Length: 276
Image (cartoon, rainbow, N blue to C red; front, side, top):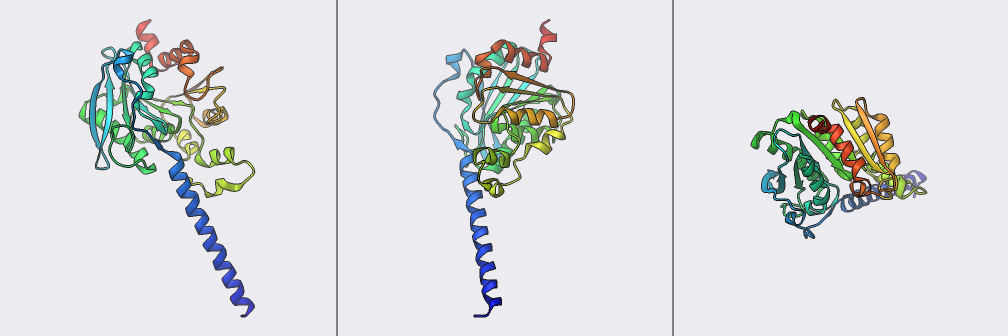
């Protein structure tokens, strides 16, 4: 065998190995990002809530949502949940929003809770746009009264939605800079990030915002390090605000310091002016 043929075989083997590694990396990413849940540990009635239960279409599948009514004429929060759990796991914080007078609409992405379909990256993003479309075109909600809230991984569809529609503002809770940066965090001594896709990148999205943005993060968040939020805050244009809740982890900011948390929401949505 000539040296040229040997070199060609070696190069072919290398690229086949690289392609296999890339495919394995993308498969792992897809299967590790979303953790769909179907069970309900709590019911709205346990929190004194009585939402409308609705279904709307996204990608040809039925998506389940809950519409909570606050006070007439108040803003609405479109809640984009993170990568696990159902609407039931967010009832505690939703109770706080409703008590403030806010309307809240939360939906369960495809493959989660009572929604149909499979939990996949593309659907996770598309469902946010379908939820907004349902609010504006079916329920006739004024888009200028909608604040899009992205919790954890939900910051990805929230930012993309905010850059594509008319809305009042964006609230980002403990979200991430990018999937590649998360891979670097989890595997600091191995170049695993090279196998991660670049489509779930919030850095460019947050820099393009044309609406106000509020960042909220717990300083003890050990799932998505607080530096992700600080980096996104640096990249975001004005007007912007950041609230760091001392002693809070990834999802308990509203429990650790409810005065600070709900006070920031009231200020950002203008409720403090409405209530005096």
